[in-house]
Length: 276
Image (tube, rainbow, N blue to C red; front, side, top):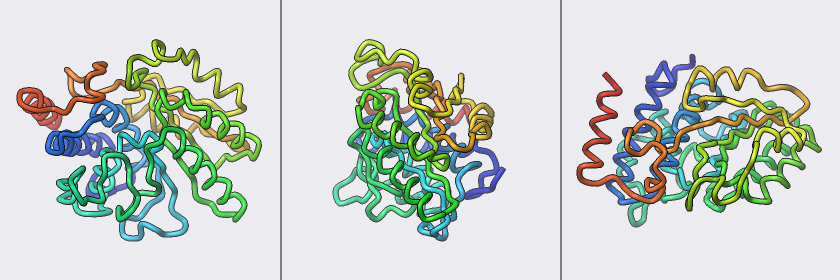
């Protein structure tokens, strides 16, 4: 494994992200902690083991690009960037406060390591696809990654992007679907039945890699090793919304609610125990 910011295991990085983001959302009275916790393991594996990056040169030309298209989980991006050394962890205390560059949705303005401001669902993935096309045409070797939500896959722009990436054989482009099966107003099946995401992406010409436990780091690492040439790749990671905090797991209310009082104390306790 690569050594980033003092971490030798992505699991340790994920625990730090969870601790940071619980504190951030608690202090700021912000939302979306459930979405943050479901995507944490995906980001930890990417930053610990997959991405070619250098926190001392955040804009180096040959770096890999990562766009968090599900921008409402932006707290996780800020936390992973801080823990990997792009800026001091102390900066996370400014999250979602007046005048802060660390807005509720991902902001790239003034945030080293953040590639794109996101929040309008479907937008980030499309820009990431454009980044991959530009890299191909300029004969650059870096990879482009984007993380989307399963509810985000209801956006028509996602499927326009999928057609485009297949047409231009963007094998330097990997989409990771955080498939926690829940979105803002209910389960994905209740809101708009998605059916089989794997079959949908296959029908658009993508190489599909399904991860049955998308919060399992070994399974995630294995999935990245299964990518192929001459096709864009999509990793469908079956995750749990609110993963890592027992009373948040699979509970829709934590899409909106911030942990205060007993809920905050219990969340901190569980994470401390997980680190023993």
